[in-house]
Amino acid sequence: MRFAVAIDGSAESDRALDHAVAMATAAGAALTAVHSVDPDVYDTGGAEPPADRTGYDDRLVVESVDDAERRGERLLDDAVERSNERAGETGIDVDAELLYGDPVRTIPDFATAEGYDGVFVGHRGLSEAHERVLGSVAKGIVERSALPVTVVR
Amino acid sequence: MYEDILVPTDGSTGASAALAEAIELAAQFDATVHSLYVVDVASVGAEAGTVDLIESFEQMGEDATEAAATRARDADVEATGSVATGSPHRAILDYVDDQGIDLVVMGTHGRTGLERYLLGSVTEKVVRTADVPVLTVRADEEGGAESDEAADGDAGDEPT
Image (cartoon, rainbow over all chains, first blue to last red; front, side):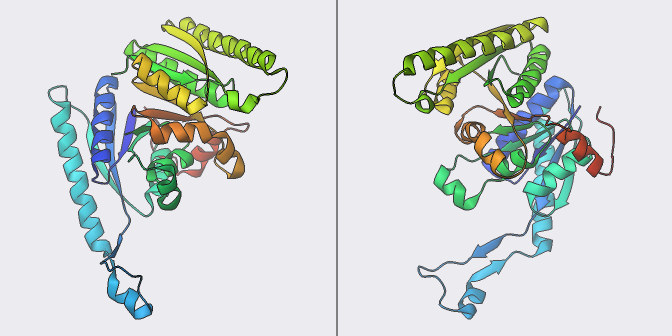
């Protein structure tokens, strides 16, 4: 058996990882930590929305793919290290996979194509109204995935 | 790992796929499967004949949860069945709290359009609000969504 766990560096993703490690250890399964490189767009702030196009150019900063890639690699290294620590003496067969694109698409597609048995993903407790606006990676993965998905709060 | 696994049922194929997964996990971890059917009182309304209608839903629930428990026991897994009334996702969350459930297993439906939105709404609410992990299982639709997916992918390794 092989499980995949979605990693994004949040506290929720840490909890999903811990749960996946416990599950994989108990089931004697292998685990793959997966992160999808999807550069962030930051708003550097200000009370009013920018007045014109130049305003947007000044305020919005798009993370470079290189930065996002380095961040992803670091997150995966941390996840593998954390998995090995938590599995303790029992040990666990854990590896990492860096994907590129929207995690809602890339993670289920990867896990399905590679024949995984299940996916674990963290979920932050957003309100319904919040979620309607922001969407939820966990929900997107549940909806897209033909594999069993365990959502961990 | 898991000791008490809750599988809400509505008698649908999605619930049946979820039950199969729950039984498999329960067998692996020596856990108890809890089958729960919720009579959604709001959907019944408050008109003449309502009491009879609720009673018939309750009977349906008894049958569905008993069938689920029997399926689990046939696989040598401990099982209980119960029927609750109220709003489905609230009743499910209350049951999780009351019975110390540590995993909820629920079905999801097709991946496209309105059907997904309408039919998956209870699952969606439970995923968003439950404090315990929620395992979602795709129901095998006619034609089999999973085999479609497998054919799409570039084969890869065989699942082990």
